[in-house]
Image (cartoon, rainbow, N blue to C red; front, side):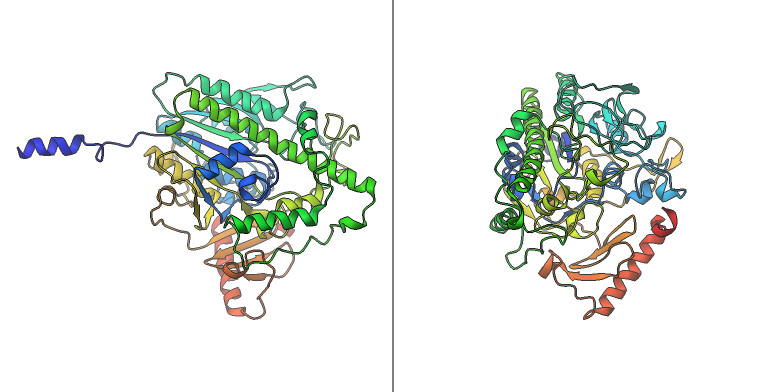
Length: 518
């Protein structure tokens, strides 16, 4: 009887090994904190809104402030410097800034492949141009990748006139996109769908890293998508920021006691613009909105494919952005190929600049490349039917490097100490599985940032931040996450402690003085 009882317990669902879920990680490019509907936007994102409504939002989720560092951190579970990508893909002559994934880290693709997953990447890669850093050599079975920071959405002609090229690859083969090619966002979606179709009737789970280039500049979109939004932004940026801020408070993502940060200093008074200027700015934002609209539609197609495979209930989906909205002014950059044709078309290269970037990052200050909240705060959604409670809002302070260990938790796979004879840097991220399931979870003692001399540390509710060559500022984020009240002078001991911790971390991960290496 005793032996029989043991057999019954061992065979019960409670003790059965949990089935490995399929996993989809969706990464947007240069999408601001408030650019999707679930985070306050007026832009139509019904598919992302559905994931948020039926899943979990983390309202204090951070990225690494720029495309390359964030992607390196997501893929490896480390701070970007530890993976060799403290800046962009140019080698700066130091290990932390070599510009490509080093040999002491592995990607999620490499780890999950060992865990029995089929691995797919479709979209922007941007973590190194050398062969050892390519997706095909970093654990991905199927890969369609943009190797660079950006591309025309209609072809693969160079954006820059300084010798840099735009490279797309399928597996280990370079491909050329022409003006007759499918709109890039749609092509990223299409490749992912065709790769997912290969999973039909397969026994192994799949991992899809869906890395859209949208809405990174150049702002280009399909005419029918632009038409949906043309004229909707003629009330201007101030009213739009106020409307998004109000919605963020109503949904509980932003504390009702926080102030909206001031309009960015370079942004003009909308009411003082001419009708012609207002129309130009309205067009820019309509194109940007159209890019997000098309990305969301692509996500909807992916969700439908997963459903058609019968895998909807066994698929964990995460969504986030690599950094905040951008203030880039490509029309003023002499190293960018200038095209001044029809706005939004293949004959135009433009960006939406700081006025609309300031809206994207509502309610925060500053932009992509900065380590104020506007640069490093990301919308974050996790969706997993029957495992994540619908409508959950988490306040856990989390970071893009937490994704890697989270996926290992769901895959029931332990991070190795070595890989192909090389020692691996221990993971810095902390898994979020317990947080997703409504249980008490481990948290970071502190989080750190450095990008091109812009640096920050967050410990508890305190954040110290300094843009390159600027003095340190101090904020209590519980009372003021919008960073409107600098208390550096009134809390010198707290600030000094944070600065010293940042200096210790900098030594640990190999941060160099940006003024000496650029």
